[in-house]
Image 1: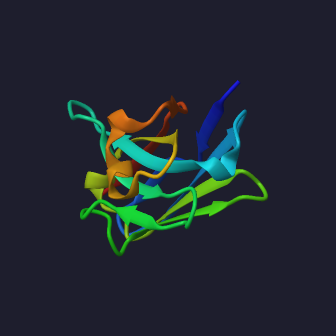
Image 2 (image 1 turned 90 degrees about the vertical axis):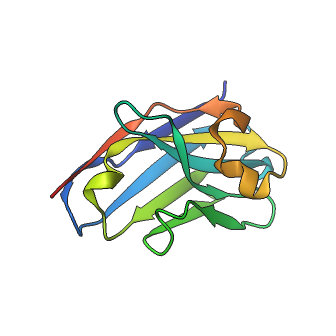
Length: 126
């Protein structure tokens, strides 16, 4: 059974940092690209960052470039999202998702991912 479990969310002041984790199981981790997505109240789900399965290339939404860093650990089947310089507009539920095969920049499109984890709430206070 494919499982993705996101964790690490919380309440942080603007300018602070959080690291989200996504634990993957039930599939061949190295064959899947992993994306982070977020959804704020009343807004559509949007892509935040994506890391490819093969070459580990990374992609970011313009709104988080330079502040967020995605990484993956194949030995632990984990993907991380280090979030620095957080802003109130980063407040959302964050999800990780997986899709096999190369997507490149298209990995930021939520509808292209097959498997989703439950979300973790990130709240940034001003």
